[in-house]
Image (cartoon, rainbow, N blue to C red; front, side, top):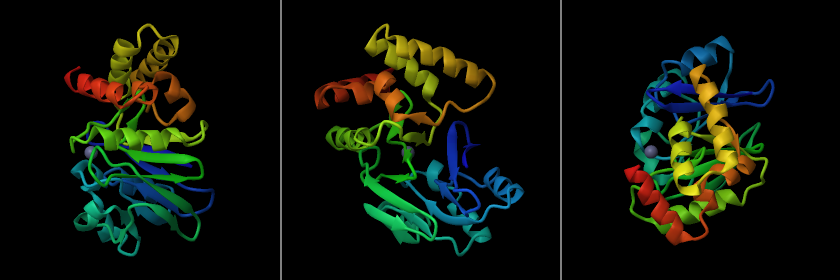
Amino acid sequence: MLKPIPALKDNYIWVYGRENCPVIVVDITEIDRLLPFLRENKFGVEAVLLTHKHDDHVGGVAAFKRYFPDVPVYGPQECADKGATHIINEGEIVTPHYRIRVIPTGGHTPQHVSYVTDGHLFCGDTLFSAGCGRVFTGNYAQMYDSVQRLKNLPDDTLVCPAHEYTLSNLAFAESVLGDKSAVKNQQVFVARLRAQNRPSLPTTLALEKQINPFLIAENLAQFEAWRKAKDQF
Ligand SMILES: [Zn+2]
């Protein structure tokens, strides 16, 4: 079971679970739609994973903990004062039903982390469909390295980013990659989904390697130039 729950304007809270197991919740923007979803499906929660410290990823953690006080909340050091009870910057989390790899993916924020479990990548604001996160730390080399680390995951990895930015990212991708048929096809496909108010996510790493300029960039200089161009796009 994999479910993106829309929150705020364009955030997704991801809920993932193996069959008949308590679920994992990634980033808690707010609990307005999360709590009813968990209740209706009678899901227990095994762990909360936080990718980074920004409010639209941790703003609902305190409220969540009032309903689920005993659930461990994992996150990088920068989330220590945002409700994280277990600090993890890399390595592996082992819970009763899940093994979760923690990949350091700083750049958007210095300590941002991504999580991989059962072939699902929860990458917060590091990688988006057809795009990548804004570099707030000013450290493009760190972001580039982070994206390379994610690029090394298996092609069939299901990529679960924290924002619905796909259509605007595809417009930018078209502007730098040119008349690429994979980008064009995806624009048509995603426009149809969004017109029906359906998420464009998850995506796969294999597809992203075709449509995402930040995975296609040949070196740091090109990556940085494209990321700066996207800021102005
Ligand atoms: Zn952020």
